[in-house]
Length: 391
Ligand SMILES: Cc1ncc(COP(=O)(O)O)c(C=O)c1O
Image (tube, rainbow, N blue to C red; front, side, top):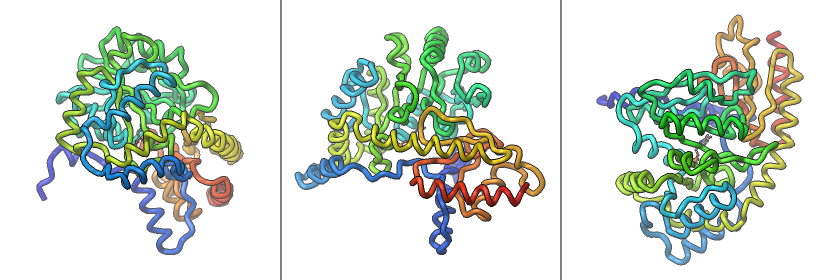
């Protein structure tokens, strides 16, 4: 085996691992309730599918420009202008095979060996691993539960070094559901402009903000826009996770570099998928609004039920479709950490959750409520029963 040092530094995606384990149990006929999924449980809307089918029938099945078809770059620029209040030109938008690839491309084009990127914890699993793949160093300060896991500017101040190149902000957040309020975004933006730190703003969950309107940090001023990469995707908003389509919007020189990288790696996002995405843009947010209302009901239910369990403490998240309960009071005896806790739930309750340590936060679990109300009710009952055996 002659694996590179680079790949040996990288951990497999914990969320995919737990889903695989749960699927394996299901194959054996075991009825597992999954709270691991990072994708909406709704089908991709028909109008999107029809756009792709039509493209296939019309023979739009060949390579496209590396940065995506011009209509889609224009469409995303228009959406960013109308919905997110950021004035990007189509040449500043690159269509990527999922936001995940877009993020990896950003790290690839900005990082030199030893550059630090501040990734506030709890963080989405791939940021740190992608940064390591690009020879950068993730710096992962913990945000406080008391402050609802919201990133504040003092965390950036405390972690600034001469090697700080960028900061990742993810609002609404996976895994905590935290939403950074506008006032705090303004302070973060001001700090990054003053210290010449690039902002990577992952807004994949922009459609799932329950209490406040989603704010894009790049909308806060031209100087902020000039240092920001706005990352988004069709994946969660239009339940298109398998289509692999997202975007990066950023100053043109960076966009060109990302397109070059894309041209030398994946060539382009899948041709007919891009035509489906064009139809998603025409919907102007109606489909995600429908999902948002359903998720809101599930959020309210799951938070109430989790907090009714002795020893479980769960903040009511303002966005995304995850809850991140504190289960640290159960870490005793045979249960040494949150991984043991998640394994106990899988084996005893046949319920799949993701341990918080996968997101850089021990003593928590992440549960996705992108599953039916029926599953949520059954899963919660099973968790209650399994935990009552422990106390
Ligand atoms: C915070 C966050 N960013 C990016 C992604 C990746 O999105 P995509 O499926 O578009 O690659 C995910 C998916 O789980 C996510 O949760």
